[in-house]
Length: 165
Image: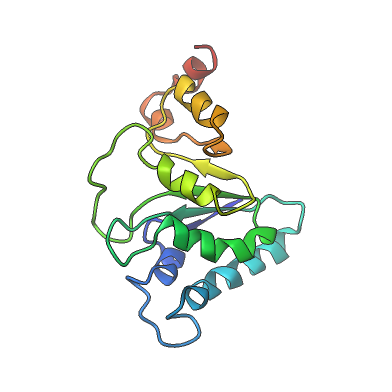
């Protein structure tokens, strides 16, 4: 199962210093801001057991100074690695701020930065449309897996063409 801590949803709001201005045990330091995430993750793990894969989706950057960075995420997720099976890395969504440039694999550097700090698999997304690019990303060991989404929504034959290209 993948649970969502990205794109401005509740968990992301607790994690980002831009939206979490609490002064209690769930605000302030990155450790405190990650407390709710830890509580949720432990509750999920308690329900599904150790043999069920649990993946977290994160927004590696808020695209503004003072927001979350890949390094912040690595620091918050490192203590939770034993409860997670993978990290699915996206970006943005907390604020109506877009990246300055959306190019092929534009989110890959964020996923690769997180991968440098954790020992569990990291998944990259974001305009990775070709099989050759996905293969190169994996061969270069920038991340452990590549996810696709939008191409499947845009083209019902995409998966078939990708497999047999």
